[in-house]
Image 1 (cartoon, one colour):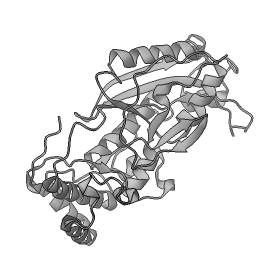
Image 2 (cartoon, helix red, strand yellow; image 1 turned 90 degrees about the vertical axis):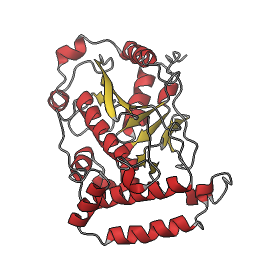
Image 3 (cartoon, rainbow, N blue to C red; image 1 turned 180 degrees about the vertical axis):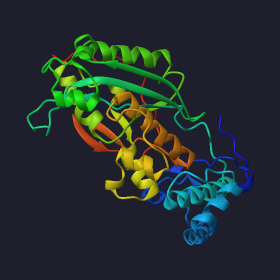
Length: 327
């Protein structure tokens, strides 16, 4: 598990911080958290160092990152700055108060659905999930440990549009032979149970944007007349996390742009749900390496999309269970 030295130069990998400087938001309500006291001199040291880092050239940033054995090649200049700032901040705070390395999720489940679609996506069109992928990211090893992928047979509009086939690469024959959504969801849940998620290991769901859970899964559960699954009621929207952590506008949080800003290329076929999920996982890995503590930031409540405060306690998703059928 994550072991880190107390002094800055001895660490090979930075730790994690919240994806926003959120301690100020608590307004001192958590009196037990010493790190919330911004009058501590350590924060002045961090602010001064951040000023030095802001004035560094790209070559100076790379040199300093190399000194601490951090990634020097990947990422635009702002990403390199953030990597170095976060490393220094984490080391200073660890000297002040050791961090409990066991408090974070053991796994992150990355999901990126593919759904039926038509060119222009007319507003009255009802999207049905046709691919259910899951990529299991181990937060301790920072590696993709396993993947799940099954196609789904749509029921309301069983015939795929040519646009949908061209976009996703999913053919009519593939969905015709697939199981319907309730059976695929049952298979996903069994796969997650076999990996002891929510029992032995803590985990969170992660998506690229809000739509996968708040729209596609929400609509699909209504079509299939099943209740919304409890394990998917909260998730990490990586676009929000990325924008907050690297301080970039929303228009720079599309999948291909995030990859490009981090010095990576898309690997695989765009709009393949499994390939998209793997690439999202690569972004998550890089963010964790750069010191971001990816946290749940969105949830479903009474069928509506809600924001989760970044100061909320870090809680893993429940053990997955098959939802009941609606009356």
